[in-house]
Length: 130
Image 1 (cartoon, rainbow, N blue to C red):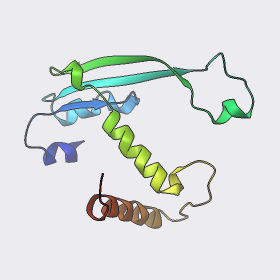
Image 2: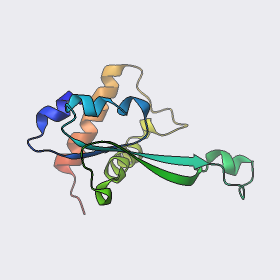
Image 3: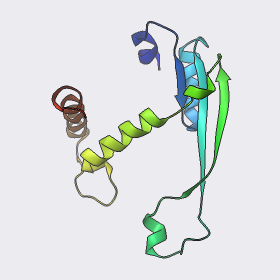
C-alpha cells in the first residue's frame, strides 16, 4: 500500500473487497488521507439448485452487497470493485495456471513470477484492446 501511495500525485478514492487485512492497511498507508470504502459481497447457496455435480462447479448466488465507509469522503457512485475483478478475470482466463483443475502450474516461484510478468507486458504493451 505504501508503494501505491508513493506512485500517486493526487488524493484518490479507493475501494477494496471484504478481505480482513484490507480493513486498516490502506488507511494507515495513506495516513488517513484517502477516501476509502470497503465493498463486501455476501454469497449463499441457491435453494433452487440441486446438490449434485452442477452445484459443485457453479458459483454461489449473490445474496447482498454491504458498503462499509472506512475514512475520507467517498462518492457512493464510485464505490466499485469492477476494475479489479475484471483484471483478475482476464488474468485467470489468459493464464491457465490460475484456474482450478489444471496441471499448468509452476514448480518454482521464479518461473511463476516470470509467467505473470510476461502476461502483463504482453497485455499492456503488445495486445490491441477493443
